[in-house]
Length: 335
Image (cartoon, rainbow, N blue to C red; front, side, top):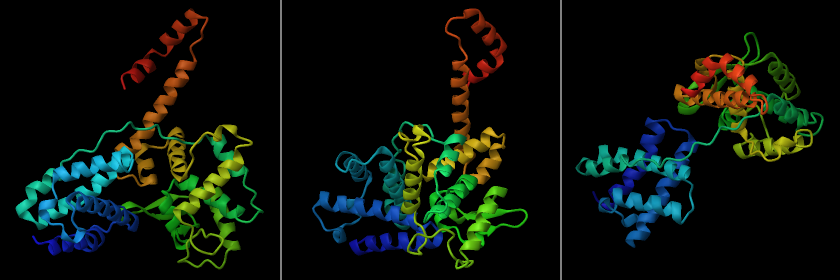
């Protein structure tokens, strides 16, 4: 393989494989592009070559491992970011294994590099009172107030990913009976999520006041009349959470973003007794194991609640409590 052939493979990886064949989203393609760009730049510097002069002999599992160490130590990338870069490189070299069969063994060694394990943080979510405090702090008569109120109410209802909310168009809203919204999720998979009657009322009033929005318009626009982006929605949430801190001080120390609302929707559905498979479809999870994480949070809450039942000065009462809840305790401890 000559140098120019390697660069052709890089181009085809993005144009044909990621976009045409796999149909990945624009944001995913950009993330893969950034990872491969960083990698090739690192290899070129380490080999004292120009990127255009790199060949197949310059690529291998050892240089990939060196690159991963470099982005952690020099670029100060987190383990999560490091693993995302690795995932992008694995996809590229898996593609290369089919195109350059003579070196497929080397490429396969790269695809077998394991990601680093990282402690899984507890998913943050909002209590019902906190959701009400955030919504209650929004003055709907102020500029942007009604839009933000409807946006956060809808986000809490459907538990969408932030990009899914950005891409939501007026034609995706079905406010008749039964009311639901069509969401285009990961892998360009469409799912239908039911709308609560309160959300339907808010959306109907909002669309009535914004008749300039046609069927193909995004539902939420910024002050310049352009569709809201991810950073715009994050800014709105930060602003509204800050305003709610006065009536709900517990929000001050919290890092709350769009995904917090997604976790909140899932937890409140679970606590309301909604079946796990329904929540999976509601959120658009690919695997049920992802949704199962919310059960672990709920069980941890139950453990803490059970622990708070222990009186400090009444051992006999504690024994009675344990005997009464022995089955529950044994089940919890077996998890």
